[in-house]
Length: 161
Image (cartoon, rainbow, N blue to C red; front, side, top):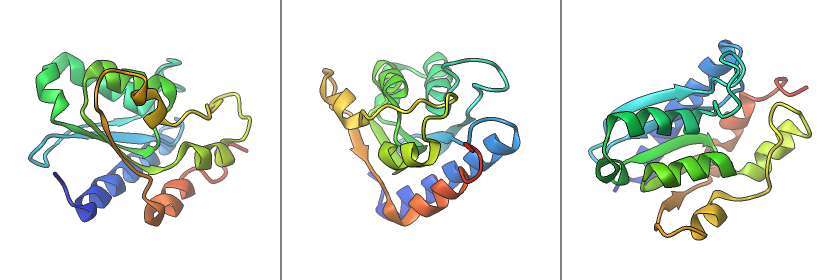
């Protein structure tokens, strides 16, 4: 298990990935996958705009890639880090991909404050914990990290206007 300081370092990397995503003309989200030993296995920006894939959220795409490379048993011991709380779709992908732990910086409610009613990101008011609670797996959720919320939210400023 990782310390809070280690979680914060991985989340800061996810925020850097979200900056790259925005610089690459995509929505400003980033995710990464870490194995039980603390090795970063994969990083993923959003691709929904440039690839025209409605399911191209960073978390969904990362889980798809990881599920092609690693076994479900291996993924259960991995942690997915993401800048914002996973949406219902991404939570479903995490569930089906069998990733055992999710860590996020910013709550979905805060994300909704940033995106408003923008058609690109019609945010649900459905916490990932609620999605996971309806399933049969005990996926651990850690977050939000209020001390990183400002940094995670900063990447969104001016994007959704």
